[in-house]
Length: 250
Image (cartoon, rainbow, N blue to C red; front, side, top):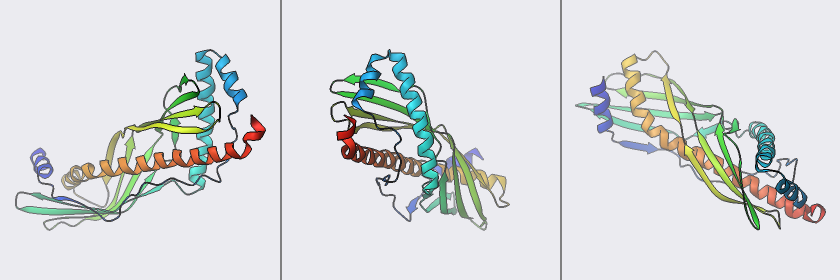
């Protein structure tokens, strides 16, 4: 079996993607920011010890993420569609192909804090670094596989565990506007897959070795676009709200 897997990995013929994933900024104009940071808030925060500042920001982001996750689900942004894929492979004189369609990634509305928030003062700005993760991510695809005279089809399901990312935000302490300083999808995590539909175990294992390498970059791109687009949309909405009511809060 290991020889088959090694041969398959060495002889992949390529991936055909039927639809392209485009970066986007999501619309959060209807998102309800329950708290707008004021200059008074920043001054009070600076009076606290470093551990107290971290505790305050941890509590703030936990409450915010709870509201955000609920919003993502209610607005139909979770699950996220995955692009169709076709993968051809060859082993010795035999050839095969697996087609993935109607793909979904569920769980993007389970964002959680992944450790303490980091606060850095670099006057006239305050930098806040939020380490985040997804609670759980589930994958599903309809698949059709062909290998010599075998042609099973059914549902492929799976999970992604350990996905970590962070946002480095910069708050202008004079204007109260927020800017994204840096973003990184640090670790996609581990992918596990199961093929359903009465498929032979050895053939299912073969398909896993074929599909995993093509799924990883797709998931990375989908999650990058989703998380980056989400923070971009939130910052746009937040800054617009600050500009709108700035005269009443400073």
